[in-house]
Image (tube, rainbow, N blue to C red; front, side):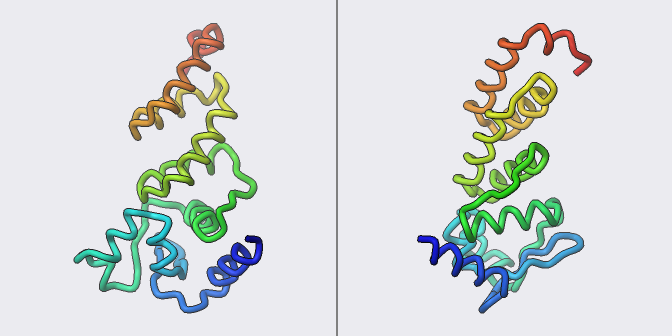
Amino acid sequence: MVDLKEDFERLYNESILSDVKLRTTTQTFHTHKVILSARSSVLRAMFSTDMKEKIQEYVDVPDLENDTVRRMLQYVYTNSLEGLQWESALKLYVAAAKYEIVTLKNRCSSFLKCNLCPNNLCDVLVLADKHGDGDLKKSAQICALEHKHDVFNSDE
């Protein structure tokens, strides 16, 4: 299995036979439709129906930061999340939800749940509500109740 991960990572890193680009406002990422389609139902729909992305050789993602796209693609190609931090997990969660990369969204959700504290609780509640994630919302609510003194007496 390690060989497959390394092979896919090399395929991405060296842009071997890439056939579609993801473009942020400042960077272009060379990727592969078949791999993106296997991991994202949204991208699969873009590439397999009569949407402009099927014909074009690029997908614009101006709402995502370069680091978020890089991390998302790292996960898509290798199934790994290295050096995940709070802010990157929030941003990756949003990207994963947008492109329906379910396993990435679940991994980010697990990270957020494990790192909940009174200081970041509001961010998670807003995120969970915005994306209809009842499980994440429930975890945040439980954390709020466990730390009710700190939470309800804070400025946030």
